[in-house]
Length: 336
Image 1 (tube, rainbow, N blue to C red):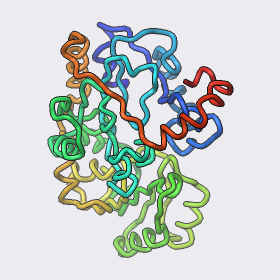
Image 2 (cartoon, rainbow, N blue to C red):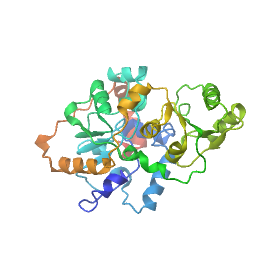
Image 3 (tube, rainbow, N blue to C red):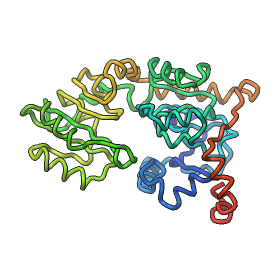
Image 4 (spheres, rainbow, N blue to C red):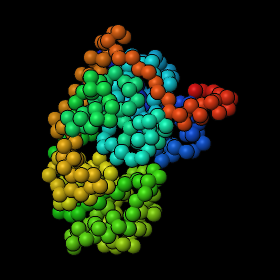
């Protein structure tokens, strides 16, 4: 978002906020049920530190001003105070596999957030959806996104992977494992098998584990030391630079695989490698500029040129609202 804003700041007054919710999802956040997500306090604090470090204007939860345009990297939850605004959705990275929860969402039996990023784009609350590649455009259209809303721009964090080749990471020619936060986000993962498979693929070569930032570091470190005692463990650090220096990249459900593919690495993933190559983000080094151009076009659109948005609420959402709305208004009047 910052990279996009750089191309707009001379023309527009840009404000930033950590991702947030309203309604029953905000209630869930306040009682600590969303800590594993980007709405969790740890990620909100990280975001605010970044914004303050770069001296960017902050409007927490978007309550101080009325905006002509809203950019967001997620539409699993669309806050009520931006529903009537012009919204541009920007793809952030890889989307999750379509599991049983995804299909329940498609039947309007569950809210979008219950299926994680597999349902990205399904809100239809935006004017335009900026995506990573033609492959992703095809994928989102298959899921039900309106083709006329999609613009293939590339995405800023993955549009110039060659830049990571110039780095100071001390190791080269190793096998790198980028772990996931599957267990932290209530998914099943056999970590022992993943570690042992990585040891086998390394076949005596240096093995390095880069832990996911949302992962339980203490647990993950103990597991690696038990099953791969000679491996190096990095709880933090520049993942992309590590990928640039490795010979082999092993991932599960991680967008980092696209860096490996773009740099011609030998890659392993729980997804089909053939499909991942088709989905790999454009390496145009101009995604932020392209998205900024889309922003200008959308701002100039009159209301009659915008496809009306009609919110479809899941059956679970209707039940929660009917049963708990009075309590929510009493407890958290500003959340609705």
